[in-house]
Length: 110
Figure 1 (cartoon, rainbow, N blue to C red):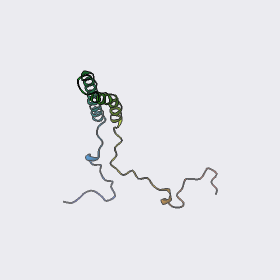
Figure 2 (cartoon, rainbow, N blue to C red):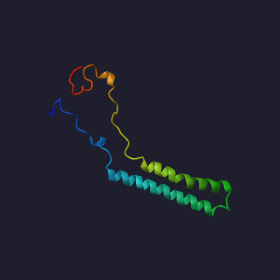
Figure 3 (cartoon, helix red, strand yellow):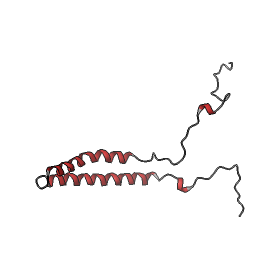
Figure 4 (cartoon, helix red, strand yellow):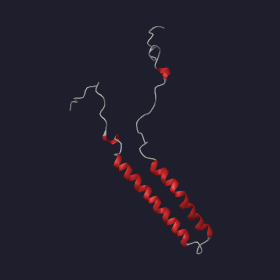
């Protein structure tokens, strides 16, 4: 089979490298946040219900979990679309070479 693409044409973006749609990303992060807040409510309820029935350290661990989970949930909920699969290297100014620097002012002379 003969390829009709010329060598000078840019590569076509693949669908596998396309980012996740914004609506799906927001829905996924909201779901994760709500699950973590549900776990927080369970931790707090269990700590109150088991205060005099289990060793105090177990109830205190549940309270600590209920206090720390909101912070962790917000961090995970805000960690969204920063992921990049492409190369993000920058050009080193020393590699540009002489004569290609920034243009001189409107004075025109050296």
